[in-house]
Length: 163
Image 1 (cartoon, rainbow, N blue to C red):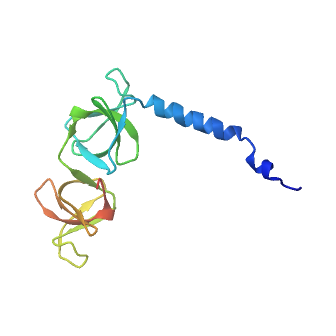
Image 2 (tube, helix red, strand yellow):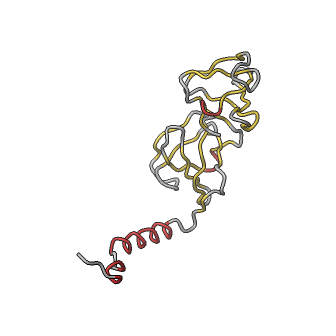
């Protein structure tokens, strides 16, 4: 089959539908504001309830343990859409979050070291799902953390979630 220049400029109805769907989803988020260019993390307060919609009348889904880190994805008034460590996206009231930064261990067993080096002496070990307070932001792949019992050290950034 011989192609002519006009045959490459055919209308594509699927493209028009995709554009329409994108515009509709953007307008449905009117009033919702995405967080800035950097990822923002907060921690669950003492009574964080995850909801299926941004409303007190929405269905309560489950509670997160205090201190569990969450990633803030969207802000809509007093409500935040957050991603929890397992990946679920749900809504929470902003007052239920703490400014204290935490991380959660994702490795089966993470060795927290006295210095940010793989050959440094171990300070303690933490198993999967242990929540640690973030003392200093990560640098060169290591984050300084503190256990609830007061033990402190450096964890490899790829062994935790919430950075």
